Image (tube, rainbow, N blue to C red; front, side):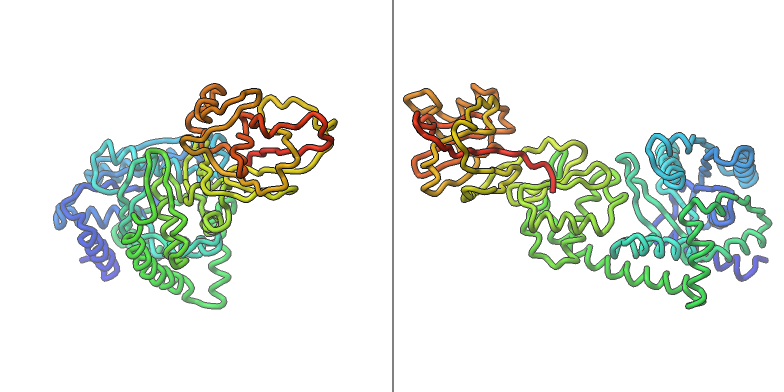
Length: 474
């Protein structure tokens, strides 16, 4: 007869499986050989007939502990044979991944593990991947996320049923032991005659989680003996609040966010939303990118909000190769080197002399002696014009269909679109070039040249010098 504790774990796993609608499904169980994953495997094995589930074991040899790692793989394989469950054993060179990606050994091991599980889940045609994370792991996760400055979502910790995007593949993750402690899983293993493997890397101080487990949590217990339960309650409360915020955000999401083939556009009008909703909206947008939320903290969310409010024409770089640029009344998120050209909307009064920031550019203006200004600027981003133009208002805007100007040396006017063609300006860049105007018309198209009527006169001693400087980031 099974003891009360073992029955508790089996009934808990049964409730979780039914609650996740995974009865009658095929599950891939990640088994390291430690007490938590062994307890999970055995409990699911005990429920196979009752819940009509099929199981496949997955074990990854991280090659971090020499012969011990090989022994772990052999141990798990033998468990599979004993329980008559198919077992997939994989291996990965974690140290090489660490070096190539320039990440910690802990991160490299996690990346390799999830990639292996994702590929195995596809090969084995399973409905979900079952992981042995416990309530003890949950407490450590909440504490870890709190320390690193995570928001409400991070403090919510792990969920019983969730999804993880691994190389653009959405993998269902099932964690049925989140109400079970690590002490209970060890007791369970002892009761059913399982002898878990011990991984000495769990004691290495190089791993952040090990320091939390071995030092910080014991220290916090001096203030609260039930600190783990308190952290789990915090996670539960945060999850409830986060669910409400996400539910409301989903209702308004499409009003502010547009998805393109390789970018996401967030309308700056979203800043009128309550800050919690706005932050959630940005987080949901970032989720659409592959690993978009990895290494992203509250500080990065706040940077995007600041960009939306005050960064018109500017851009920021975020983790995971994501670029955010504020252009045309929206923030555009893209992955990798952004090819998005800034569109200059609106009309910007020009400060003379001084600096005038506009989307993607800064236009400097000042007076200079003609003799010092006697230069030939081939790319037409630094020009000199008649000083008297500064007596009236000047402004900067973007190109508009139908715009014309009188090119230098010509008597008549010409469509600026034709000038773009002559200068071989790509269509994608045309609306991003600054145009300086006055009441008389177009004075200068940055990168293309000045109007003939705006040129310096023969005897002028001083010129108005205009400089267009591209701005790539804040």
